[in-house]
Image (cartoon, rainbow, N blue to C red; front, top):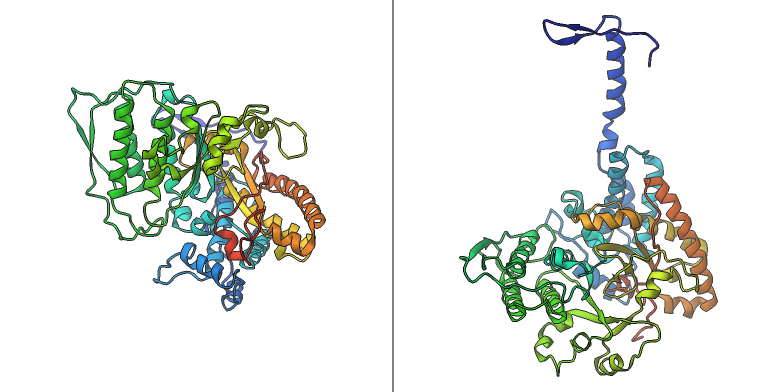
Length: 537
């Protein structure tokens, strides 16, 4: 800045401003400062742990659990194929995950012009690496598979890092195909999705036009192409559009490799089956308001299609009215024998009310364990099971397939798993909680490709820091020690949330903890899943 008064003269012949000679050196000096401030190559290079640090772990034997079962599950499920044609070893998987995590942070700080302390971040990264390698905590299975791969580093497909999501059909008359396409898209990324039946009877299924000539959609060989094909089919029935036919010729054959997400192609047959079955469902519903059964059938048929091949795994949960006989009998296969072929793809639960008559629901549940019960009022009112009403989650509409997380419509959540029985002291466990929470908070920095999801996640940044091996911990240290570690750990996580939220200049998270039942991740560490007891010694 300068106190000098500068007059720029307009040259009327060239219509440009002419700069006085005594100002030019000042401007040139300012350009030099600007270039120096923005051309640092250190800020442009991806984050990487030093090779000499990684080398120390390359010959260490990981402590996989359950006498080799954990290692088998790791090699089958989470070890990615490397460019040289070999599969990752555990130290390489951990390296990829930690580099990806801190590279996300680096991109965020750079794009928002925040401070990046390279030395401080390196200390944190090395600590995170060590604690994942020793399986004191583990990212979710989605994170072990996707973080640091081309999915996040090149495609920036950060939705694939999240465990779970929920979508409500409330208001679906405005865009009736959207809840279904969201569920299919998320499911194909390995995300478990919950949905409700609130939108039943909200609009009439018009059926396909009987006068318009059919249209043909050539389906691209991609996740987006499959989802788009479903959208075209649904809209043809919902809006009375021309019939749509499909060209499957671009879809790779069964058994061919999928380079991006990994695994092998299931071929087009499962998608053909989905199209056929959705046509059958909507043809029966044509001319009438969309039914509860049609909503759940389409969601379940999508689930069956997604799990039909390669490495995709997903889960669904349906929520319905406890007084709705149609809904609570969906898994009564004496009433609905045709649903046995695909009804298994979702857990079914009812929105229960305190003081309601549970008789009818329990008669059905006594047969096959479903429907389950979801007290949405409690989920909206309480943060913790301490009797204190906070109404923090008053906008929640449902939850994830295992129902350990409350969710708003189109919201996603990242769960991260810690193993207290892998720690000798509470202080060591709290230090693990810090880097475990940092991993999950980092995932919330990644934008998804759904605007509705970003709208919620940027505000909530919901996280589920979890514990597994609880039964083992009680057996070794006792229930009172567990209570102490839980309370001290919860308080520490609130401090870490404040620390990292300030660091990244984002809101604190609406939820920070939950106990997830775990899938295969706890097997790697040799831990009993969540609060479950061992089923075998």
